[in-house]
Length: 331
Ligand SMILES: Cc1cc2nc3c(=O)[nH]c(=O)nc-3n(C[C@H](O)[C@H](O)[C@H](O)COP(=O)(O)OP(=O)(O)OC[C@H]3O[C@@H](n4cnc5c(N)ncnc54)[C@H](O)[C@@H]3O)c2cc1C
Image 1 (cartoon, rainbow, N blue to C red):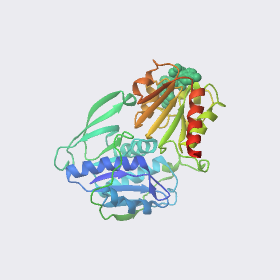
Image 2 (tube, rainbow, N blue to C red; image 1 turned 90 degrees about the horizontal axis):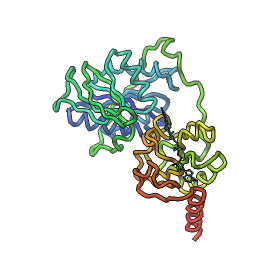
Image 3 (cartoon, protein in one colour; image 1 turned 60 degrees about the vertical axis):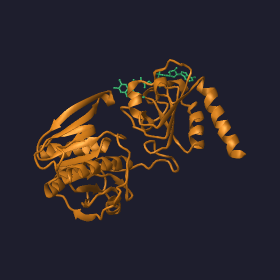
Image 4 (tube, rainbow, N blue to C red; image 1 turned 60 degrees about the horizontal axis):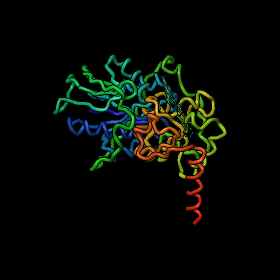
């Protein structure tokens, strides 16, 4: 079996998990293994039932009164107990914060190897089988270095680099056998857990899921000038993202930071305004289908990533784009 950790919210699997699941299904198809999934939280059963579209045949829904909200060590512990019950050859998750954390705990508890941010996994051709090694290629240094590694052992843990594979439904959906699983936990497993969640402002589109992101960097010049970017993002039903300079200066919250130490985005278009294109920023936006750069400096490094560029002052260009969109919407 190939087992995937699938995050869900309100009964809907999240996008990064479905990307990792697509990766896992391809691996299962090439090795002839079955595809299983593990899900946590209330309404996990609804999300599990929907995974047949992605080729999952067995799903374990973790039920425990203390596990509705996120608790990394406890989720890792529960994962190892599902691993013991289902004997997978490999366990996969999305290479996002939770995927990395839960699998790191689970691998440590299981005494098994883990490789993070993989973009390729090569099994031995037929069924990987217990003990057969896996070769993986994984991203290091935010994707600027690719490293080959060999994973031995009866089970290995792997996260898939975010947005390395788009999510795709299976050609032939499968019936999902959903099983509830109650793990055995100690108090120590629950020392770290989420105690409250703050909902995003109503109507706001999440940065990670936005189809359009309007990014602002140091060139915006201050917190108040972000109203120009907010307006454009609103007209395009998108979200605002920023560089680290902007969050470090306190102009915008860290939740809006794009990059190696922020959110990794994959919009249809990223409109990068007053951003130079440092590697740590590019890591977070390189999965965009197209980048439109607005910058006064035609030599800025981000130009090499641009599908389109406007050389000019963003305080002139951004309001002009918004005005043109409003004019077209009105006519
Ligand atoms: C460990 C580590 C992790 C990091 N993680 C991240 C991360 O996650 N995300 C991130 O973004 N950075 C990150 N950084 C910081 C990164 O190295 C850069 O310092 C940062 O991305 C630069 O931000 P910027 O492009 O806004 O600013 P700058 O590099 O100063 O660029 C400003 C740009 O604005 C242009 N400009 C100025 N005025 C205007 C105007 N009026 N109109 C149009 N263009 C204008 C300039 O020509 C310039 O290109 C990290 C750094 C380290 C060391």
